[in-house]
Image 1 (cartoon, helix red, strand yellow):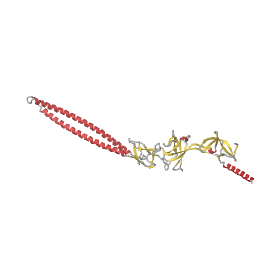
Image 2 (cartoon, helix red, strand yellow; image 1 turned 135 degrees about the vertical axis):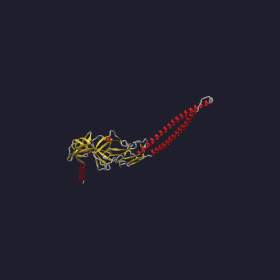
Image 3 (tube, rainbow, N blue to C red; image 1 turned 120 degrees about the vertical axis):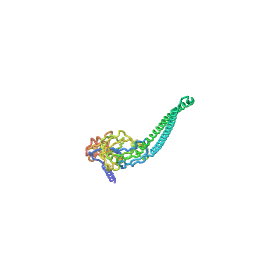
Image 4 (spheres, rainbow, N blue to C red; image 1 turned 45 degrees about the vertical axis):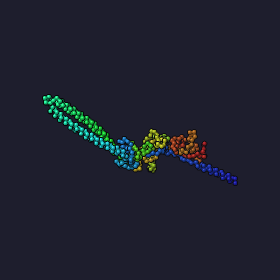
Length: 398
């Protein structure tokens, strides 16, 4: 009985050993195209945009009253946005009232000036007639008039002369005063007229129309916030754009910690979130010089990467669509690589376990470029050899 139990135990141990040996998985090393891909999220944007802005002639902030929905197809001349006109209508109405008041005051001043001039002219005519009669019937002969009568005639002439001088002064003074008052009214009228014209110009610009056919895309500020109805906007602020759908580019955001190795000219594979089955190819065009946060709420810095697309299809591609890109940081044809889990290391030395029949041999290797899943082998292995993906049990030569 004891012998039977011992035999069963030995068979169990042998079966477990064989099972452990069978559990050591190996893969055949082959030369294949090797790429190190960096994944990044982003969106489509247009290279060519027709800017749509708030009116530039306003000196005050403008309240956005209505805005065309984003991604709407628009025709040239179609209404895109409308700003609140009540402020400028009120200013214009007040200026019109003020203009009418100054116009009435100017006419009243002209009337008063004309009446004054006519009054002075009438009195001047009377004085002139009296002077003429005084000259005509004046006699200074003492045989005809007494000294007192002659003195009275002389005083009458002197009085009439002084009165004429006064009337001349009165005429000049009233004319000067009237002209000054008319000039003041003219200046005020011109000022109010300019106010009316300025507000008319603003009122005409409060309706924003499409500069060309296309898709209307709302503007986002540096915090990623889009323009909204009811928002107060400064003169000339950007509302959005109408992009050229034939010239789209991709904008990717690469983490600052992962941006090492990216450079212009590298190939990029793109997939739109809305159309994952439609792959797009492109080439890395430029990289921002400084990493910056994408959102005010997050301190994480990203580099902005622009990708030039090989082709665009306006039927399904739109600016603002989300996408994922894979930047080929390294692209090598016919390269020998192994899975990362097949590598073992200690003190800066790397090795793999190469299958030699039923056993495995430890072999030191020289590494090259590494990706998240595979590592390039520059020396130590040959194509066609098999390496263990985990630590094998039966190692020879160790």
